[in-house]
Length: 99
Length: 135
Image (cartoon, rainbow over all chains, first blue to last red; front, side, top):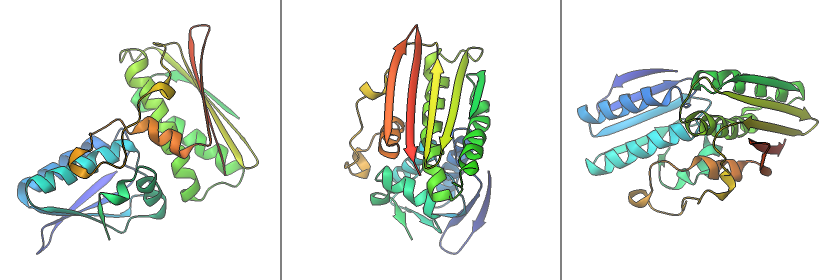
């Protein structure tokens, strides 16, 4: 998995490329929390993320809670259908902001 | 069928997932929407064994058997660790709002939601967990 960070007018976009699993989720968590240190608005571009296990969901939950505590926002874009299925199974589709 | 015998280490996760992918592909199941949920369920079980079965002792073993037939995938996970029936695990409440949701505890519930059949037994000192899903 690789994560590419882009600064935009809105805030920070992290483009995730590869699988978010038990082994790679800690790196994503570090990037998400570091981004919220710099900006209150975070976009996660999931176009190249074909796989996410509960380790990744845990990171998204931490991100969403951090966003709320900072009165910021976290938004997911370009979520692939297979990953959306995991969001639906876990009911995360109801608590995440997905466009 | 693939039979994997390995040490209970996180770094072996990719070997397990690759074997499942191969077995599914052999029966024409390669669409990510079908494959990913099965892999996610397998990851939850494997990582649970790695983290909890042996108190993180990385030299203990785990066996994963992957069997596929037309339209069915069965995976059997066997370890000699602490007896643990994941089906007795209390499920987290998926209807809670963001603020109330605990971080973690989702894995086993996802296995039960994703798979069609989950069976556990402790036999001869071994935890044996069988999960199946049609495709």
